[in-house]
Image (cartoon, rainbow, N blue to C red; front, side):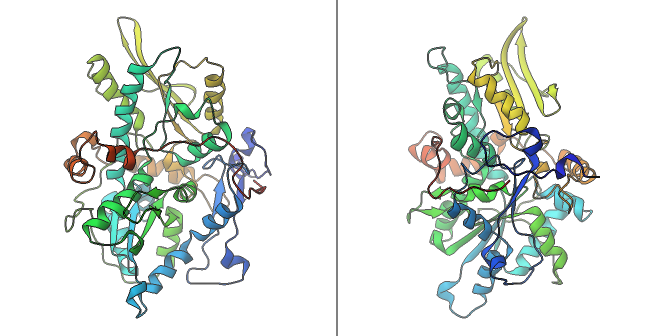
Length: 456
């Protein structure tokens, strides 16, 4: 008997039902169409799931579909093999950045602590020929800090005539793409302008790190290891402001599951290695995370910051209260019977639909909403939390949640490296460079060029 997550239905409409939330689209790779088989050819072609990516045919053009299909293990090994050839002029420096929500997956799969799992992963990638392996937590630090400042500014500027609230998070690319290409106004003005951790990591690697290593951005091939396929779509839009202009921040996104298949099929002798940092020979001493149950914890960090900045209230542990379901929760700050702040977390398409409907009707009581396309949050990304037949691996997911919870929390404000980068890389916390490197603008809805129907 199939579980609800195995439902497969075709959909080429903007309005989707709950049953279609977990439908998928197969994006055939050019190599598959040509009958080619490279190393690790058993890796499955990319699948984009509606529970990860809320895009429909309004959102994905034919050209984008091809580009997404090219972000696979074969593209990764093409660059690795290129580096083994004698023509050094064509060599690239391979840098891999790992999302913190991917590490619990590797730890659970290989029965290791999260620190040992990160060292095993780093050692494996370096045995293949990768030069640098980074943790994207530092990029999430920037994204959270900029989101905090933006929320406080919006709260102070908000009025009935010119509403700037609620502020909706912008870290989940599936949600952002859906908001941009399908919903448009009145939703997009509420999106936080802070770039996502993946976008910021692209800038850090292709701009700051490239200059520090005296490299041209196009000489770096930057790979992101992420929990969901949706990050592949996000990579297509990352344009880093570098000296060469037009350099894409992320060249390839591989899911945790794709990397695990490589590790399981490899017979390489691997020596564990510590994660690198963007600061020369300095190594990451220990894995850290942000204060979120299964994500980067924007809600908790922004809630505490806003409570202190706006009302001089110190909030310790943030208390969540489940409302409609476990994926729609709220957090409030109250004083003398008055609600000062009302935040919500809305995960999964059904909850997102409810948020959008109430927002459009002007009956939405929240100041801030952390929005994630995946029910259950980032740990439940379809690139790592599913069985071979497409169902959610509940036992594995529960194990990952326990592992993630045990990772020590580090507040973004306490990172000395972040403060150093603000000064050295961005010329201060309030410079024009901050706006260029860490913020973005959103486009309205409409069919992209060469749009095609995609069967979900």
